[in-house]
Image (spheres, rainbow, N blue to C red):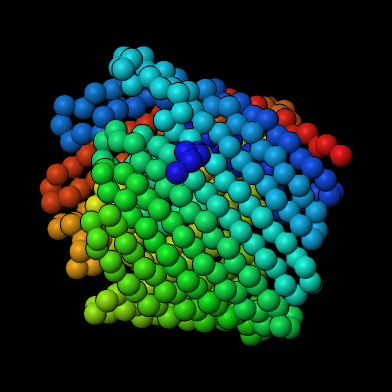
Length: 380
């Protein structure tokens, strides 16, 4: 499998393309980028005892390219890290952390949208894969320094029958490799959405999942979810989705609930999710319960500040699961970014985590500062 790409580069991927909220003229776009950062890690080997600290210097070159127009859009992103450790020089590397993605949208008709999204990530810290959008659900679990890769490709089709009715069908194929185990997920989903009122939208969705790994274990689940989204005001939106999930011969629940509130210069959100996931290096599936809060502020025109705590509980689910104990993963992240000019941004990020599995605890704190240069170019 071709090795494509990861996570300290995630900052770059957020910068490289203009946001969808801004109308862009049709044409070809190219955005080279470069991030220079330094991180202090107080538990570089991610151990429960005899923690060792280090300072990591990272250079992250990146590139985005593609074509954007109203009927057809294709965008590609790629970035990788060059890492230098101040103390543990044997950990120096080029390309241990990489990230690549492709996004395609085609509108052959005003009512029909065809889409395809693909993500490939590689990292030397498996827990980072659980935070990467576009991959299969991965439980948060620290496993030390260990090469792990994940790949996902997801085609979908959406048809709008009327201004208030639409249907979406999608398929996902995903692979997770790490810790000597390879897990494959195939997912089929079909959803019907209707705008009930100017403030309410209803949803009915079926999700079918099949998990397989290289030990020969196979697990299948079927889920039916009913959902409701309500705009309480111009600034507050509530979403609730819930339904039964049948995993082999075991019944459980699939739940997603969120509240979003917008202030004059801040955005607040809170969410709870219960779903099934896989764990890097483990056979079988787990059930995860995740609580997440997020607050972002803009105290100055070019200054963005954010903070977000989270807690996740993962418990063994399937008959083939090798996980025997429940894991709690507590984390908090805080960051600030300041746009110096149109192409240069300064960032500071803190992340702290505590993992607890039957009393065995792993504590880790990371503080990073960096500069990102990204210069969009349009070519006709």
